[in-house]
Image 1 (cartoon, one colour):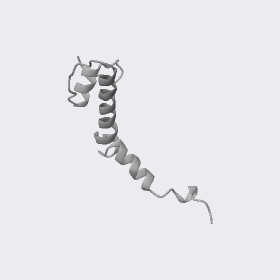
Image 2 (cartoon, rainbow, N blue to C red):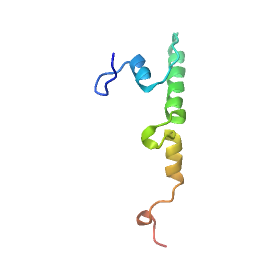
Image 3 (cartoon, rainbow, N blue to C red):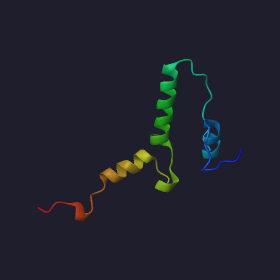
Image 4 (cartoon, one colour):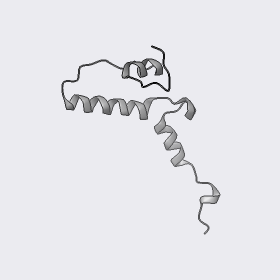
Length: 78
């Protein structure tokens, strides 16, 4: 099935479209599901390179934004 942004994705199709190979495993309980979601969230925010952000991770982009000095228009006059 082709990947379309407007279609309702399922996990396998999202993984195939993004080029990500997600491990397939049987979840035997709520703890397994919580761990799987936490691992995916960590990958998505901490290790995934985002093309729209200059091929850096979302966490790296946020850190760079937080480290940058705010524009003069937002700085308080002394």
